[in-house]
Image (tube, rainbow, N blue to C red):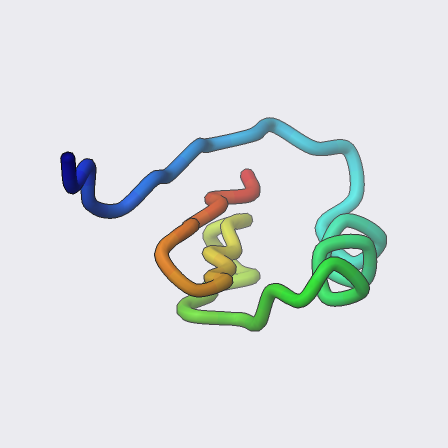
Length: 51
């Protein structure tokens, strides 16, 4: 059974520290707007929204 993409949104205290953490896990920046306080990271079919 093919489930497709998996995504989750997280509220974090520090975007820069969270970005570094997820980069160490193999995620890369997919989209971001630091002025609007969000960052979307992707790893294969997994997507994490950091706000």
